[in-house]
Image (tube, rainbow, N blue to C red; front, side, top):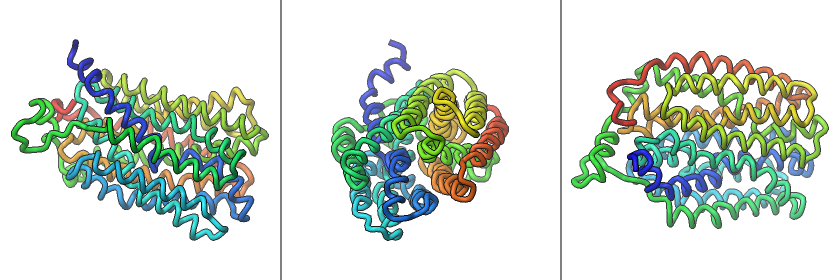
Length: 412
């Protein structure tokens, strides 16, 4: 068996556990369930959509502030010790949301708890586990593990709609709180065991892993280089587009005359395409120049966002969702892959945590901006047009990364 195949065969339980952890994480589960909760909660309490979605901004802002701390904890204690207690904290935050009584401060408290108590479930934890455990097929391993976002994007809207229809929005929050406790925590406890080769270990698992994990730039060295800022700005622009569209897609489609189930089905197409994007792009970056793959992936959602402008049929909406979702699926694992490839693994979690902070801010600000556009104009069309432009700017930026540094060839 080839080394790359042996690596995947030996460590598939880690990939599966990471995938389930991502499905149940603080940066995915609240994000993809909120679209189905916007209407029932705002109608009961008389809030605007922008007010409700501002809770995501607040949550993402806290996530951005805590991500460097989570990066440090991952490097010091390892992903397993960070992830397990955080899953329980996320469930507590979701349960708190089920007790809303009409005060906006309590909504912000609940989503703040999801961000702070569930902070250890952000991508810094999951990508570090994969990046330091896979070397020959890191791109594919990241892609397979990060399909958890796509699975959640496909299942969470339907699950939340079903819970809301049968048990009300309070029951929906309670049902969502069961996911980290009953699905993720037991799986992580038994299967989430990343390869930990510490610097200076007397008996490393293998020489290649030990060498790779000791190789890389410090956070200060990375920040002083132009590539860090090119990658960060590319993420900034692309994720403003993705994050604005994601949670607003379902309410946007219902405004255009689709039923809630039809809109949830389009959202599921978005989720399925994320899964496809993860795996396809993960496979390609192990073999091709990753920034070139990224540029192609960031060009196609520009067309998808333009297709959502105005009135569209179910088929057109589904195709647009597929194009956007495919690229959204590629972006997160591309960021992880590129960070490891251009900056090395020695301080990966710290460097990635800063990049993720940018992503987290986008995930919070963009939904509120899109919702504010809706509140001001009664339509999401302007938001979709802006998103198209942001994707095209990101294409240009990502190509500026240039060749892979030769110093980190052993990292891959």
